[in-house]
Image 1 (cartoon, one colour):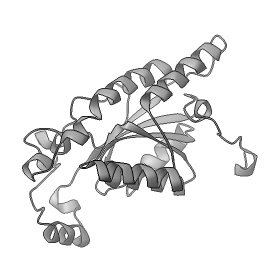
Image 2 (tube, one colour):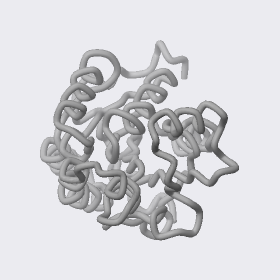
Image 3 (spheres, one colour):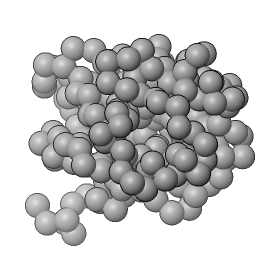
Image 4 (cartoon, helix red, strand yellow):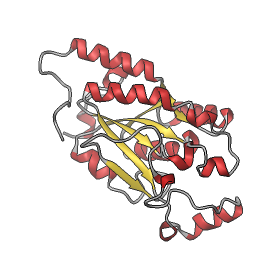
Length: 229
C-alpha cells in the first residue's frame, strides 16, 4: 500500500495497537543501572535510571498479555567495535573504563529479560538502528509504531527514537519507563521528543489503551499473540 494511502495513526489506541506495534527495551543492562556497574563506578547518580524499572516491568507484562512484539536492545562495546570518534569522546570525557563487554555481567540485562521468542538486537552505537538488523526485523513483522523505553532517555533512547522517526515509524516515548542521569536531562529529552519526533505518554495510559482495545476487539481479533514463537 502506498504510504500516502495508509491510515494515519492519530490516537494513542491506534499507536499502541498490537497489530502493528513493537515495544523496544533499550540498554537496560547492569553497566547502566546496577550498583557496581559502569555508571555507578563513574560516579553517576543511578536513581533516575533505576526508577524506570518498576513501571517498565508492569509495561512488559501488559505488552506480553496484549500480544505486542517485545524487542530487547543490548549495547555491546567491545574494543573492536569502537570507532575513532568513540574512543576520542571517551578520552575527552575521561570515561575509559570498559563497559558492556561481551559475556560479562555488565552487559547482562538488569531486572528484566527477554522471554522465549523475543528478539534481542545487539548494537554498537547509541542508536538501535545503526548497523543492526532492527529495521529489517520491524519490516518483516509489519511494525508501524514503536514504544520506546530504557536508558538513557537523552542518549540511546533519543538516538533510537530520532532514527525511527526518520525511517517513518510512529514513535511513542514512555516517559516513566525511560531514565536519565539527571532530572534536567530527562525533562529536556522528553520536551525535545514531544516537540519534534514522538508522542510522550506514560505506561499507565498505554496499559489503559490496551485494556480498551481488548474490550473493543471482536473474538479472535487483532492481538498478535501466538503469531510467533
